[in-house]
Amino acid sequence: MTTDTVRSRAGRPAPAWTVRTAHLVPLAVLPSGLWRIALVAGLPIGATANGAPVDPGLGESVYIVSLSLVSEGLALLALGLVRRWGEVFPCWLPLVGGRRVPPRFAVTTATAGAVAVTLIWGYAAWGVVVNGNDLGFSRPGFALLVACYAPLLLWGPLLLLLTWSYHRRHSPAPLG
Image (tube, rainbow, N blue to C red; front, side):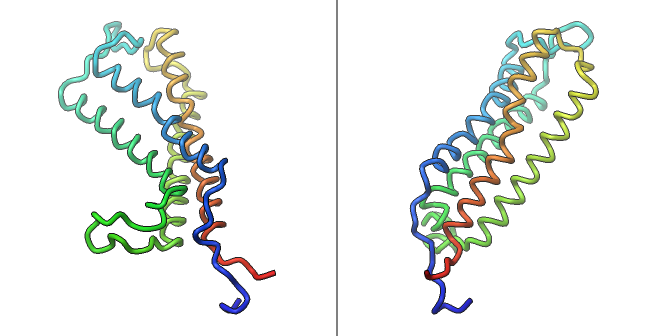
């Protein structure tokens, strides 16, 4: 299509359902992060090794807390698909600050992320279904683990919905 027969949809506000969905993404990731932090803090969550509560060392603890923070940070990026900073790079970013975010870049990155987390957490869920509680958790501890990690299965599909909506709002529409 030529520029004479299309108009930009950019600048259209995000529909209310996408704003709510964007807020759901970090909320879906939060329980697993809290579970991991509880593990590091030594709270009784049913994680055992050889019958004793799991006690991660300093290195493992740093990794576990970092994983939780990075996961939540990545989940918060879903808000960029419904906020201005998903359309214009923040001014504090070197080289690109203040410039328009190329929609193709945003859509490609978000789609890749959505597919990645869908595959990662789908594979993990499949492992739980196939192997069950072979980690040595107490029955209540295993139930808590599943309850905290199950919401991660929503991360990818919710992100794909947001990406689709972002793409629709930022792609040319035929004049009619």
